[in-house]
Every structure is written in structure tokens, then in C-alpha cells.
Length: 202
Picture 1 (cartoon, rainbow, N blue to C red):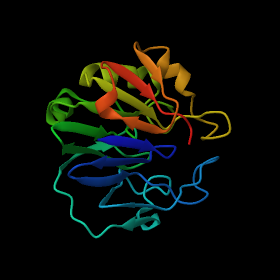
Picture 2 (cartoon, one colour; picture 1 turned 90 degrees about the horizontal axis):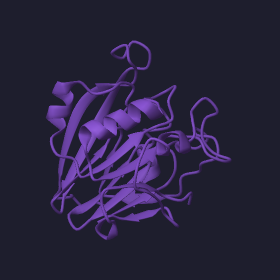
Picture 3 (tube, rainbow, N blue to C red; picture 1 turned 180 degrees about the vertical axis):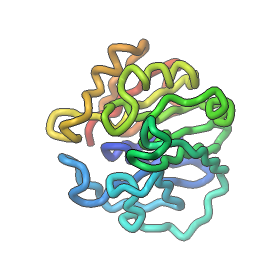
Picture 4 (tube, rainbow, N blue to C red; picture 1 turned 120 degrees about the horizontal axis):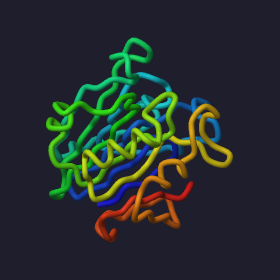
């Protein structure tokens, strides 16, 4: 099983039971990023903003994945969607692992939401703030969920990302066992856990 980061909050998950793209972004929607043409069995979009919902930019394979997908309804802000609307967390369960993509989560999870997520093995979470939870909230969220593999997303870096959001370093300063990867590919089976893995810019 592996994850490939294509910038912002977009990941390709490839498993023995099928493939999925999380949150593909439209051309021109995210400064510094251009999504290559990708293909997958399934596209999962956390919400209907152009930097997360460009499903038409993904070529369908025509295959039906055999993995299980769960969805948890949350909000894009701390005002129950009054500012930015709803947000969906998607959990893909394949090869015995549960991979959760938190989308543009804008608040810390309630106890009920945390319980509904169940066990999470790989956590993809936004850390940049302003539009989502910030570094401190993300660190608390990661701690509460307790996934052995944590991968940050939706942050600003040199030459990419929104000016209003923070850099990944703010989040990493609050984490232990940080591993900066040499590529944008995360080979999940090869990771020693616990780990906060940071894919390289493709």
C-alpha cells in the first residue's frame, strides 16, 4: 500500500483492493500547484470548493474497488458550517489498514466524532490554519486520534500554498518522530511507527 502526495490535500492511495484519489484540485485553484492527469478507481472529495473537488480531472479506471469507505460529516469551520459549509472525513479500509483523510476540517473533533472514526492507522490532516485547523489544533487532533502514521497536508511552503496559511514547520515543532521523505511517495509498509511523515514536493 502506498500514498502519493500531489500537493495541497491531494493524495493517490494505491492498495491491493483498489485505488482512490483524495481531494483533487482544479487548475489555478492553489498557488504553486498543478495537478497532473491522474487515474483511479474512485475519487473522494471532502467538500465542494475548487481546491478539493476537481473530480473531472481524474480519469476513471472503470474498475470497482473492493475496499470499504466510511464517511463522517464534520464542518469546514468552528461555526458549524456557517462560514465555509460542511466537510466530510473519508476513511478507506484496505489491506487491514484504515486511512483517514480529514479534508478541510475546521474544528477539533467532538468525543462522539472521535468515537465514530474508530481505529485509524494512517491520518492525513490539515495543519495550515485560517481555512482549517491550525498547527496546535492539528497536533491535539492527531494526539486524540492516535494513528501511528500521521501525514500533514494543506500548508504553505516555498513557492506553493495560500499566503494566509502557515508552514508545515509549525506543526512539526509539536510532533515527535518526524521523518522527511526524499520523494512524494509514502510506502506505508516500509515505515517504522510511530512517525509523522512529510512527503517531498513532487
